[in-house]
Image (cartoon, rainbow, N blue to C red; front, side, top):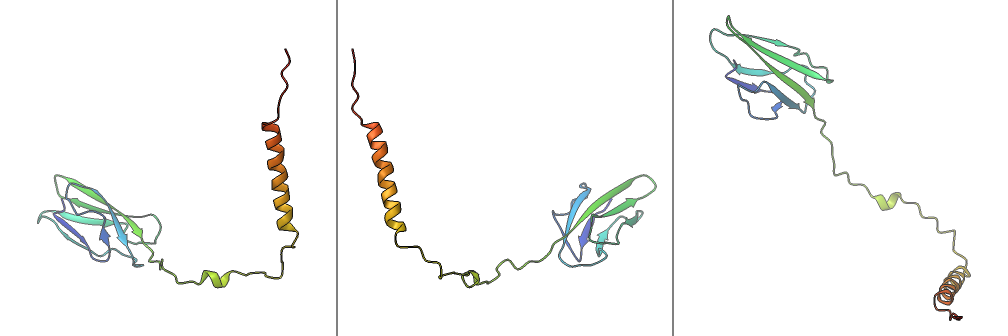
Length: 134
């Protein structure tokens, strides 16, 4: 069983616990191999599988074994891209204003007249006197 594990060129998602066998390693650089620092018992042997990273679905398996038992630890590798999220761009400069198209002068009174007629129509429908027959 591993007593301690440190990733030198990455970061474990949680603090190492010898009883936890699944970890996620976040890496910000494009290394092709995990650099590990570990501590095991004197009579234990260790083998590391899948430590050649290609950037897609990388899984490194660390197996610690002796004559009596075998314990495997699974490290899933995530490559994080560093992005500049505060890009200073002048969005207003990229807008193109076409000032050549002007609205004709008769459009505003036409809209006002149509609105007035619609209001008058609904007023006449709602408040029309009705004759009641007996």
